[in-house]
Image 1 (cartoon, rainbow, N blue to C red):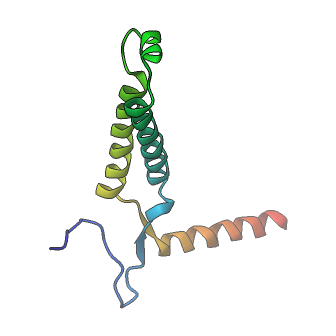
Image 2 (image 1 turned 90 degrees about the vertical axis):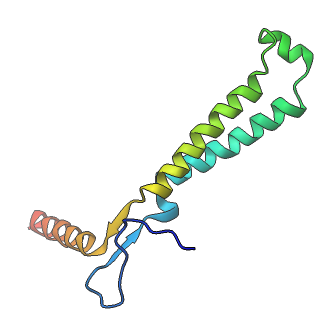
Length: 109
């Protein structure tokens, strides 16, 4: 079963040239880093926290709970990027680039 999104897709006729930012979306980068850090902290909290470590934090497993919170934030960022992807309009990018080149050319003269 395929999922349907409200994101315009590029067609083969060339009339619409849009694509998603994908991995270049900063939300994916932030989300993946948070997920990695969260997993590391959860694992440290579950398997490598001693009673002495817990005594320092008033019997709270700080690594576990902080890692769990970071995991939730990472899931939020990745989910946000999946549910609301950034759509890049290639025609608009080309127009902006041409305008910047004209301005640079006019500035030089």
